[in-house]
Image 1 (cartoon, one colour):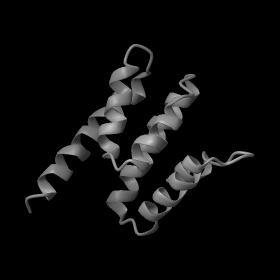
Image 2 (cartoon, helix red, strand yellow):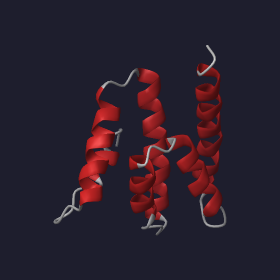
Image 3 (tube, one colour):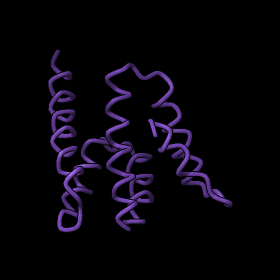
Image 4 (tube, rainbow, N blue to C red):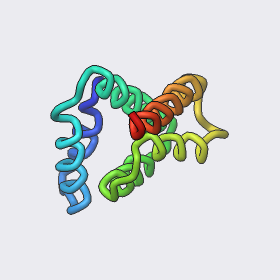
Length: 112
């Protein structure tokens, strides 16, 4: 699957302005990833893919809005997991801890 789920899921027959802005924003983010950052984005992709497979189809549109507004992807993912906590599967709970670690790492990187 890889990090390209964020670009491939925006392909529609008619692209809106939000789709174009999201595509440009994510394309810039994904261009120069190191190995650690690529693993982070693959984790986000697994969580989003799992949420979409469980029928939470509005998740991707919300992610587009929040990411193009500049919100932290870790906080977006954690918020989505918390909001859909009654219907998510075990894999998402496992990956939630990993996203929490990413959030802690980002916090500590601000000071070092």
